[in-house]
Length: 449
Figure 1 (spheres, rainbow, N blue to C red):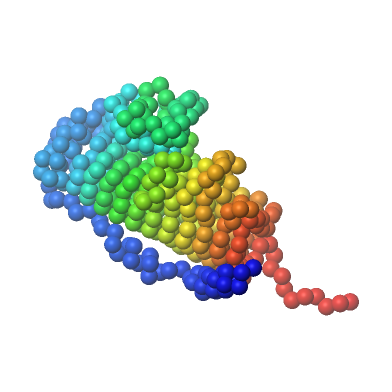
Figure 2: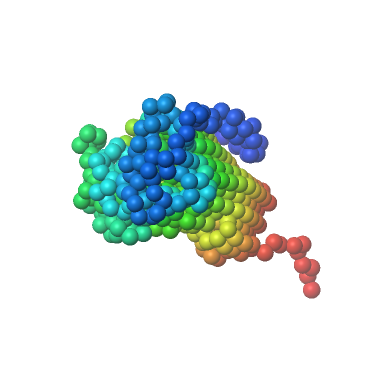
């Protein structure tokens, strides 16, 4: 080995070992610069506009009128009092608006796909295209909020659920368009392609607050933070168990705080993404970054996931003080493959309590064994102070490629009390383990008899 190269590696390893503490100051700086929305004093109660919370009447026109009045007054608060408000179609935000759903109130969307036409510009599993409107949709807005202690019901368990078995044609076409750089204006799917809309999507928005509401029964992803920044999500809860019901999906998102959330989802709780394949790599200047997740209760498929659509890169992710309150397949899951490219780096996870999972900590560069030619870079991943009662499969999995190794993984103060397989570590370098216990802790050696 070249002596200078050896010295460089040695110094890098020492630096890595010395800087694996959770960077609290960095987290504080991110949180400090996230701005809450500023909402003007104007208020309008939907009942005064003729809304009926009887679970039958279609209130679409009333909610559209309320949004128009807010726009006329440069913003304001739309108050939704106790009752069940049926809305046959989407709510489209304008800037400077708080949709306040009060305790005992429920917004219940229709499940007729034609109600969500005409199509809008959106994204579907990492590819930009035109599709059914998300049920709540904000495009190029600033200072927007959804607050209150009420419920948003996406009615996703019937018609939308049936789309899952029929989505293959649309999914495949979207990915072909991505790989072949088809102009965005020609990516029109919608009717006949069976790609379900997101429940809530903020697209190219800034200064966002989602607080205390309950999200139920989404058609697809629940809360999609797309190309948006300065976002606070706190105190919300879920019961959304349909196909692909991710809780929160930051995608090309920047400066995000997710805290005090109680998840109960049919898929990932938080899934950090950054575009798919060729299109994602072309957006390398806008990775998902500076994301803080703390004090959350996990229940669903996986706790915190990065990927698999992460081709523009994901960096500076901080997860702390979270625990499981029910089933999880995997606790922390980093997944990419050789179709993606991009990078995952500077991920810090600490103070996590997991009960029973299939796999506790899982990092793979070969998700589904797919693709070739675009291996991702995974580096600088720090896990500390993590407990798990039982892993029915693996405690810790790290899977790189022989010619593209995962680098700089720190595991400190990890205790997995029971695991079928303790550690699977392949094609990784600079894996530093300190106080890692899987299975029963060894005591002092027994004496000879």
